[in-house]
Image 1 (cartoon, one colour):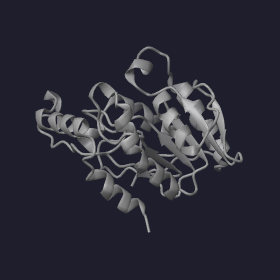
Image 2 (cartoon, helix red, strand yellow):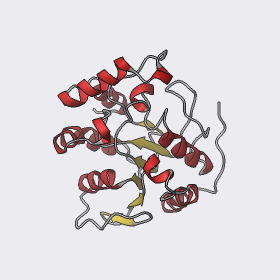
Image 3 (cartoon, one colour):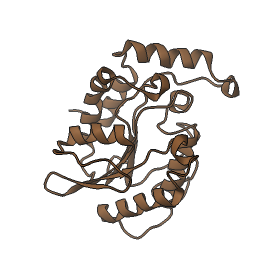
Image 4 (spheres, one colour):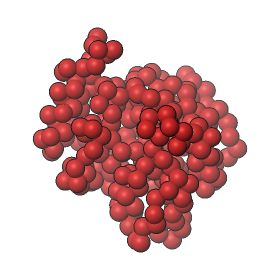
Length: 231
């Protein structure tokens, strides 16, 4: 039988995309000056979070000096800072800060993943790379049986997730757009990506992101907001 542990093992050992393998390992070897004393992860990045999550956050791909360095999705860069602060404010994370795989962060009722597991050059995976990585997401969603709400950060994640979940026709992407899945027991909630391109320009504000997670909690039927305690 499949499991999240088996899936993670398959993800971190994957070498299916030569261009991505070469790039992630080159970045890990050369490093950014600010992180020259750190050992980069330099491998595909698995998802993380609560296996019984009712909310699943779907991004794009690991950042070269973020998750490709730390080994945890949305950790080690400005995008991750925005996301984890929002999850903490929503009562879904035990801390507003995520620094690495072993920092003790606990996620409750939420799971974080991405359609592409290796850092792509210029944050742009090819269609073939996207499609080769797709089975990992399919397996992951099959294992997250309690998922009721999917928060997609950006149009790339929206397109892949909609295809995996069989959404046809696919409504146009837009911040705050909600898409019913199947018989209506699941919902996709769209958000602009937490990239600096959006957050620095004000296209995405913290209140907008908070609104997405507040609405996601409502759709998931979660109890009243409460802060998680950091261990």
